[in-house]
Amino acid sequence: MISLNWYLVVSALLFCIGLIGVLVKRNVIMVFLCLELMLNAANLSLVAFSDYLGNIQGQIFTIFNITVAAAEAVVGLAIIISLYRNRAMTNVDDFNLLKW
Amino acid sequence: MVKLIFIILAGIGVIAALMVVSLKNVVHSAFCLIITLFCVGCIFVLLHAEFLAATQILIYVGAIMVLVIFALMLIDSRETANDRRFHHQSQWVIIVGVILALEIVIFIIPKSKFIVNPEKMIAQTAEAGGNTQLLARYLFTDYLFAFEFASLIILVAVVAAVFLGKRLSPTGKRE
Image 1 (cartoon, chains in turn blue, orange):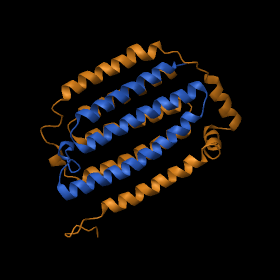
Image 2 (cartoon, rainbow over the protein chains, first blue to last red):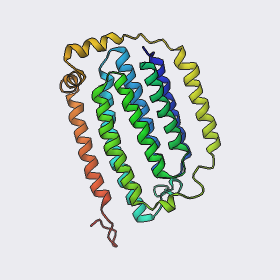
Image 3 (spheres, rainbow over the protein chains, first blue to last red):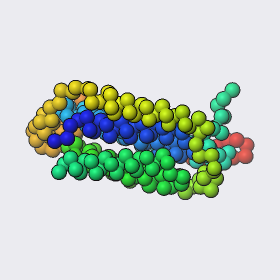
Image 4 (spheres, rainbow over the protein chains, first blue to last red):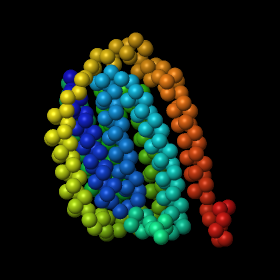
């Protein structure tokens, strides 16, 4: 039987890798991929807690997490493609349209 | 045996996640992320969440990553492979991120005491007749409002994607 802590360690590692990727990468699609990684790390720890504490609500929350991630992917990619078509840029540092 | 499978899956998942961050080509990173998501889905099976494992493969690997790769094919990858891939302050971010990871993994998680009761979930699952039945029982009773609200969020996302995907006319109006 694996201890709960092992799952949490894997979840924490995935989350930190995703966090570093979001802050370091400059390509907007790479930032997006690392965001998905962070969401997945959170899902992993929710499911691990759900199984070890005997409470199904962690899995229910994971379903909603996946739903929100799918909606976020759709809107995010639409924004990225729209920006690329109108301004031909994919670098996050160039996105300053909303700055005043 | 289960421990060995878990270590293999977790190792492949973490190494693929590191490759997502470190690889130069965005398409390669996307494929490495697919490997990570697949490994996380397999770990869900070890955690007695079979329905979520199937959902993870279907939605993340099957839908979201296909969408991302589609978007990558629409965007010119020659421009995305520019020489300055990393932010100019990236060394500080990496130092802080590694310190954060070590702090969580070495100091916080091993010192935490959780009152675990793994048999409770197995008993609940057996009583309901399976993981999917147990999930459905809660999803369509206690969480029915959240479930309906999630469908509303997806509807809004679809409308937003169709609106944003339209081409701007020269006068600035969306056609």
